[in-house]
Image (cartoon, rainbow over all chains, first blue to last red; front, side, top):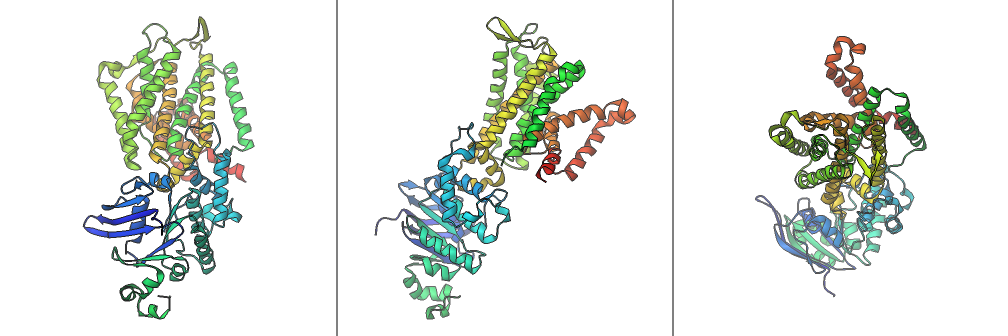
Length: 256
Length: 322
């Protein structure tokens, strides 16, 4: 296997005396979905926040494409090609789908000083926005105001915005949270397509979805890694079965 | 986003034409009053760039307004005319520089802290000019002769003529409006509105939001400087009062009254605020209540805040949308 595009080593985040994440290492590869699972409070979102620069790690390193990301500002990390979606929907509610995604695409072509041209007049920005909208399956909602869309559509918009920044690494924090079965299926399918050409870290509670798309799994408990490996390895791990998935999991019943 | 409806455009053209024609019919007092209103409208638009579009509520905008006035006064010879071509750029550049330096500090804060820190910087300037001999202390400085606008040996505009000065102010008002309108339609403006809506998300998308806010802050300061420069010329003097927090408060009220986040709202706000002030403090209309005009003004502003959350300009747009 080729070298990982992103290699996080021994990441630790402490909030005062509380260690939210302790010595977590994760490798992400282009063409692979790496799922991170664990109970609420296991430190999954904190891990995402450290990789995206929303939180600086207390210690540890993040190597990406020749750069050290630990402690770098989030906008710089984003510009290096790491896109993320948020667990809590984090979009521009008063804007239309197109304007949300166009703004995301604009960050790759800021043209800070070209104030005499209207923002909507740049063909390259518009084109990448349109591509991301189609890729996320929102073409029919292009001109809908984000606040007026269903929760699932807002989650799709979240992904579309992420895609519009043209990332190599996608950090998806519970993209299926609060979605109905049909919507979930569509997003899982989308993640499967996005794998081609992207390294994806997927944080998700929906085990059906995780086992449908994940190439590798990391199980976190209390801020630390319990097990890492292929889905089969994790499934077979006695520690995981005991600590997280329960006994019924070993018999093939995935609904925990 | 930022689209001007044909109705609004037509209204604007008519208003500008009416303003341009006003000196031909209006008395000197009223021409100067409208000129003052237009200067305050430029001031209010510059603040609206921060409050309405970047979400930065400043209570220290008088710092730029007053600083520009003092630069104009200090650069003018006492009994002769200064040079318009050097004093205006110098006044605006001083404000831009002050905004750049203070912006590095104030933009690290937000919300209530931003209000307090901008206020603190403005108060610092106030006391520098109030308590030192630099700008004539609390008496201020007179500008006996307005600067000259020369082109070679030709006097381009005679600013001592109050009608000519009025048209210059109107020209500045239209230019600032068009400049800001274009700015807000550009990538920069869209990013700014994104930052106002969700700063954190903008950073996650790769926008260096601090730089955008700093640029808006410098731009806003320089334009407030233009207003301050024109005001100093019109009134013929500067004193620390123009730097005081009352001035900052008044311009903020104009923006809120007119409706935040629409440029024409800032203009409507400036017109209504000053004209209301004139009417409410006029004994011919309000008799003995006139000297308590702040009270009636306060009631009016409370009413607008309660019943017209989009300000007076919201009245037009609401009707336009239907």
